[in-house]
Image 1: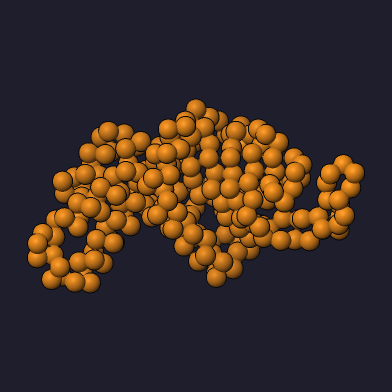
Image 2 (image 1 turned 180 degrees about the horizontal axis):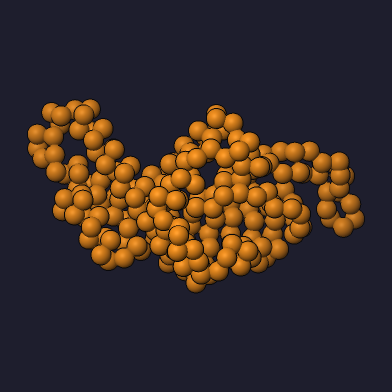
Amino acid sequence: MHPPLALAVAQLRGPAALPGAATAAAAAAAASLGPGGAGLGAAGSLAAAAGYALAANYCYLSRRSHLRSAHDPAMTRRRLLRIRTERERGVSARFHVVLVLAWQLFVLVAYPWAEPLARLYGRTVFYYTYPNAHGMGLILEPLDRQHLPPSGRARSQIRLDWHRFAVNVGPVGRDGYRHPPSVELNRPHLDVPERRMRHWPWRRRWGGASAGGGPC
């Protein structure tokens, strides 16, 4: 099937079919080159890569727009693209490039299989940034909570993050927790609010201020 036609069919089947359509579109684009495709060399490979990148981003933005519109009908693909590509105040140009490249790595490599897998468990997965804490992360949310505002979805999230936060480096007290003083570090960590897990394994106690961030 021709790549644009494959995406059109996926749209007719609904947003849930879009993540897998990116991979199918890329395969169809490669097959359409035919036996003589090898002669096209780098130009053909570049065209296939560009086609896959466009298809994968279209699928991601369409899926996110569809789910977010349950709470915010104005959350269009264009608005989501602007959120992900505009540099936020206080973020250096260099780190902004890192955030965009990390988003693209997720969209192109992980999302085509991660979103269908998350859907099997009644969840959706998306990329998130923490500009105030100099980091980024992935968030899993229940599909049946998408109509709620962010504060209503937060407790049901599973977050795999990497950003800056305060870590106590003092002695471990009788309560089993490490005490101050503390230092600011960027560390990968897991947050599962429903299990009262925050910044695991660096912390074992629920509480503290949110790092803030931008959803998409």
